[in-house]
Image (tube, rainbow, N blue to C red):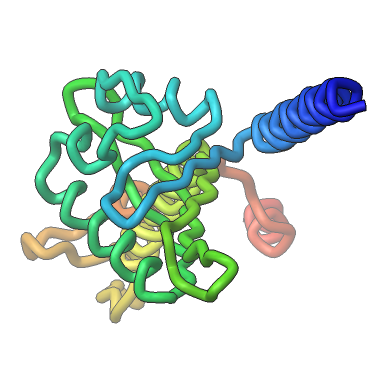
Length: 217
């Protein structure tokens, strides 16, 4: 009877172990599934406790670093400003603060990227903070598109302002011949003046009143 009980307990333990393994695989699959979203977690000493495969690939891409569980993340961030920025965010999460930030990270010699980072503390069953999680979304393309749009809008605004400035103010024009006095104190045909100070072009015709006047002559 004792042998059967031991054998049953051993089989139950194997089944429980297999269930745990399946749950871990399912959790890992869930963490890997969101497109463009990267997950990793750290302990209170900033060492990895888990991470998605995409995060490992990103660390290799932007820092040239190979990470594993137990690696201190701060050790692989080679840029001092980035390292300090990351540490401040980690410390805030470890103090119980939830953060949402848009940040730029990466070795300038490899690749700088923009991220939307969500930092959250991790608690144990007693309510003690034992680490933090970070969910990261790559917003590099969105950020660069926004910067390009802002640059184009700025260029259009400057161009429009320049065009408006070209023909603003009081234009001195002869009341008889309709020539315009230039800044150089010379007189220019109104068509030539406007063409020189704007993108307007002229085509010539004759209005009905002038046409009748010419006919009468």
